[in-house]
Length: 112
Image (cartoon, rainbow, N blue to C red; front, side):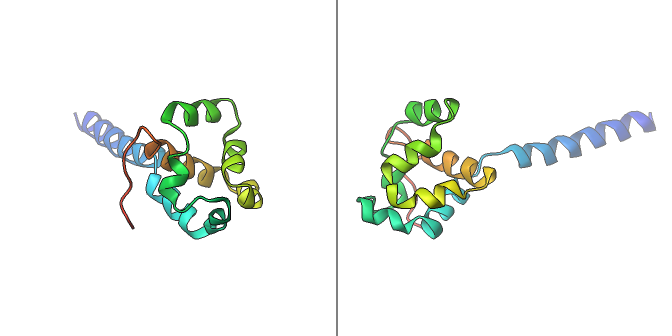
């Protein structure tokens, strides 16, 4: 009985830890954009929200599946091409989570 309870408790803790690691983080994506991609204003992109709204969710998902996500971002913001090339995989995922969440057919981001 003690082993069963131990096993169940271990599984509960493990599932909690792994679900947190896998979760999307659109807030980090918005923070990354606001911190690193201010240069996109040169290309007429006034905010992170307007950047995300350049495509709908399906278009963002298709670009990611095709491996052309960063190229799609470079088309919207050519001034940020070097920044997009230097992104770490986690940053790419976070920014993708943001643009997908707040795409033209998605939610409206908060002002912060």
